[in-house]
Amino acid sequence: MNEKNIKILLVDDEPDILEIVSYNLSKEGYQIITASNGVKAVKKAKKEKPQLIILDVMMPEMDGIEACENIRKIPELNNTIITFLTARGEDYSQVAGFDAGADDYITKPIKPKLLISKVKALLRRLKEEEIEEPILKIGHLIIDREAYKVTFNNQDITLPRKEFELLSLLTSKPGKVFKREEILDKVWGNEVVVGDRTIDVHIRKLREKIGDHSFKTVKGVGYKFSE
Image (cartoon, rainbow, N blue to C red; front, side, top):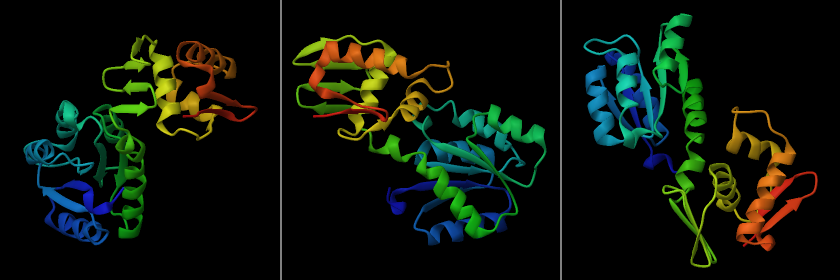
């Protein structure tokens, strides 16, 4: 991910904070957009579509909590990372922030180097989403991630959601061995407690529908998809 292609919206009603944080992040190559209150933040977020929003909580006209809630209602900003940067450290403020849809919480004052480190860590979350194309073609296999549609040898293949997500993950990087723990985390997450047997069953079903040769089980490690 190239820093100069990344937009960061910085929102704070304190001019000094905007100036200092903007300066330090600009030195790293990021495009910095600023807003002095929540109302302006929502408008600029919708217009500029930043990858990251750093949002103060206590602001005039519309506070950060309400601004975050409004931004989360904008479909094209679903993947935008939002973190609060505020002097308020009370637990209830943090809980309110996460409930509003924030991804992280940074307490100020914060040293510039630590802030930059935090920003880079937050942006790493976007890497996999950025490289994924909506439609993936591998040989005779076509996967439409947005429509949840799979075509193999010019025939539509109906897959349950988890099979689709598993196929999408394995084909995102052909040849890479995905460890069992990584698959469980990315496909099943914290929904339910499942084991290796669950993955084996889904792999078997995918082999039956798409072809045995494409799916490889690496004994004791994980699984991969081969073109």
